[in-house]
Image (tube, rainbow, N blue to C red):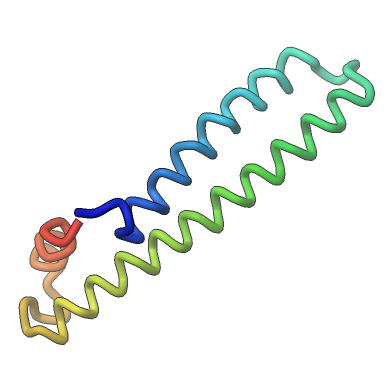
Length: 93
C-alpha cells in the first residue's frame, strides 16, 4: 500500500501521538502534585494529546468501516459474517 493510504496515515499519526503522550505522562508522574505551573502545563498537554489520539482512532475506525462497506458492496462478504469481515479488511490494509 502507498503512504497515501488513509489507514497508514492515521496509524502513523496514532503511533506518533502515543509516543508523545507516553513522554508527557512520564513527566507528569515525575512532577506529582507539587509541580506548580509545569504540572498544569503538562496536564493540559496530556489531555490535548489524549483527545487527539481519540480523534485519530475515530478516523481509523471510519476508514475500516468504509473498507468493510466496500467489501459488502463488491459482494466479497455477507453482512453478518465477522470472520469474512476481518479477512476482507485485512486484505485491503
